[in-house]
Each structure stands twice: as C-alpha cells, then as structure tokens.
Image (cartoon, rainbow, N blue to C red; front, side, top):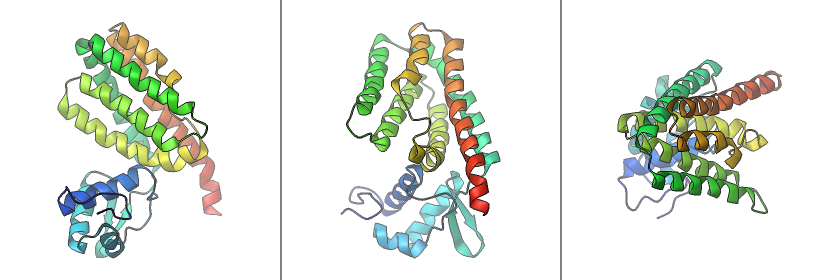
Length: 230
C-alpha cells in the first residue's frame, strides 16, 4: 500500500513507517525547514492514527529533525546558522576520525567498491538531464561505505544522523540552486589518500570536504536572509 508521503507501510510497524516517511521527506527537502507538521494531515497521508504520527514526531524531535512546541505543535527544525555550524563542525571532526580509522582496515576490495561508487556519481553527471536527487543518493552511498570500513558502529550511527540533518539543509538551499553538488572530482584527493593508507591526509581530506559544504550553506543563508525579511 503506497501512500502520498512516499513510503510502503506493508512490511513495517506503523510507527516505523510514519517515522521513516517523515524523516525521508525532511532529508530530501520535500518538507521545508520551519514548516508546520500537521498531525492529522500526515496521519491521513500515511494511513495511520494521529497517535502513531505523534509518537514518530517525538522520536524525530529527539534526533534533531523536528521541533516540538507548546500546544502539541510540531515544525521541521528551522534554519539556525549557529546550529548548522555546530552540526557541520561536529560532523567534520567525526568524519576525520572515521577516516583515520578506515586506513587501518581498508582492503583492495574496499578500494574497488569506493571507485565503483564514485564512478556511479560520474555516470549520473553524464545523463542528458541531471537528476540531483540520484546524485545526492549516490554521494551518500559513497560516504556511508567509507564509514563502514572504519568498523566503528556507534560512530557510524552518529554520523548517519548528522549527515541526514545536513542533507535536509543542502536539499533546500544548495541543490535547488545547483551549488556544491557532489562530483567524482571532489573525491579524487580523498581516494588517493585512502589508497596510500595515509591516515592524516585522509582525515584532512574528509574534514575539508565537510567544511566546504558548511561554508556554502552559511553563505547561501547570508545571501537569502535580506530577501526573506522584506
């Protein structure tokens, strides 16, 4: 049974289906930062009860995707440059840690897979019409595979949360303007550092990769704020 919010609830608990559907809509930019989350409307779209949606929103609030307000109102976490900076700085340092660790464990098979994932990003750029959502998904798969090589499960789960929170901002502010999109060339230095098992060079390449995204986001927010206040 496919619902409007874009999930399939057949093989999940209802609360998990609601949680995943709303989270996905935030991460890929279909729900805008600061927008009101109407519990009744979401319940109708997903095909679950209002209580089920409310429970999913509580979980999303705990993960930083949703802000709960008095009188049971919920909104997508609004744009806050200070919070965005904090999230990106945390992510940059943790990605660097994962990078150092993965150089201890990476195999030739892992290198082959990373190049395959990067080639997929390149192939998407060769399509007649650029699919930004597919491009972003391919980039996320590349970075997710990197984290698995580190063999640090708690670190990987923490980074998954931070990365998805970053994606929600990037989808709304950068992707629509075709700014700082993933490209295979952006991974060239990183892949060379990994191939050389150079822990510090890998860590620095990952740190700079994440901070470039932060700088672009904050710059975009500064550019658009005057228009929004008029």
